[in-house]
Image (cartoon, rainbow, N blue to C red; front, side):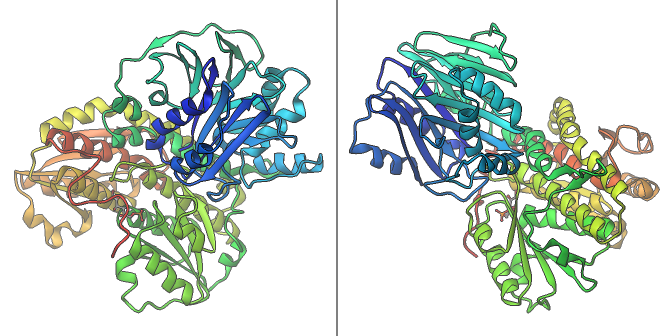
Length: 613
Ligand code: F6R
């Protein structure tokens, strides 16, 4: 996730900016840069790679300015490169900006600016901001930033410098974090508190649609309409380690809580409105030659490992239901050795959070050699997978640091829904009206996901009652079976509990022999047509002494008399439940891990990125 910093005061800015950027390294980044107002004017230095690269670049020159902004970039639009690194400047090089977030309407704004004579240097969405500020600048930098805010859609935390207003930094935010710090020698901006703690513990959090004007000796706050606002100063008690985790005890907990935002960032820019009908549609420009997917003889293969493979299993149900197209889902390490039957009419969706998993890459290369089209779903711009695939759909979840994958999974699912719905529409399986209704439902998912965290205390108490169970089984049908698999994986990898997933209908073909009074069974019940069947399955395991937790929707009471406990999710269409139903089980696994004395961020024997076979 990008990090922004800024300083205005009486000290030389460069070392302070570098120091603050180092404190944001934990957020993940692929390039870094600074812009300083020095006596010779605006100086920008930036480089792809670690911060040491930038430090080496700066080692040979003394930049004397006391006003500057800095950035660590986690690539989203445009690969990691020197040019795509921030800060970005306007054409004349008078204005510099750093940006964290995603500008959803950047393509439209870029076209418009190009028509007005602007030549872009980078592939980033952020560069439009520098040019727009320049376009609207009329002697008042704050006004120009406000007018720019009115034209950009999406999320942003911004730091802005201009040679014409050397006594100030402008900061603004919408849907991306931004905090102001009050130091002894000057004032700071930062994406996150750890960047400030060496200088101050007195901070003000900027809210959405607010701006701050930082001077060396004071800070002013404004609404987007330009009205002054009074803001509270908060004292930070956290130590650096807690601050890096945003006050959460672990990265995993933070990343689970980030899911509503990660889902919004991944979904929102891809839902557009058709100009003529006003109906929602999916923008699939990232997938080259999407029309080709219409072919009668097309087949989809989904290949991945671990959690990403579970997303693929949900994907199979999604594509088959919404687009009526045959799908094969494979574990990458199996696919690569099974001499698969695939060829140039096939489409491969390769899912990988890191984009670097060795088996997944090998499977992708094998499919590519057969002439098949490769579409990657990945979270890391510039990863090997993103470079070698024919098309890439990024999950805009931000870096995932905890080993156990959480926000990557739910955002991978959201990408699969969007592709399947679009495909269903172009294949004539769902009408434009139905597409609009389904997309409307998808737009509700981030808020519904946020609601699930209201149950966190309840889940924590549930974990306290059951964390020492030696056998935990998850069961469900269709989508719920796929989520059972992902839940069992989460629980085993971080709590080291023996957990398994079963297709509920398979129970009596063997697994039920394992059920006894020491067993906890979590039954996912989100497929309404199969409620009666699930109710019977629950009764079967209860009769053998198991404790049963049912996870269903808020408006369902079918299982209240059967299950020992019931957890209720916000109501959404059955087919969209996986993006929600996994969240309680992520939380449950997390709390079991804590109660068993484990470190959920770094489970034993596991690595975040499996780059060897
Ligand atoms: C489980 C987990 C792993 C990964 C798997 C694939 O929580 O994180 O199972 O999903 O190693 O990794 P990526 O998605 O990076 O290819």
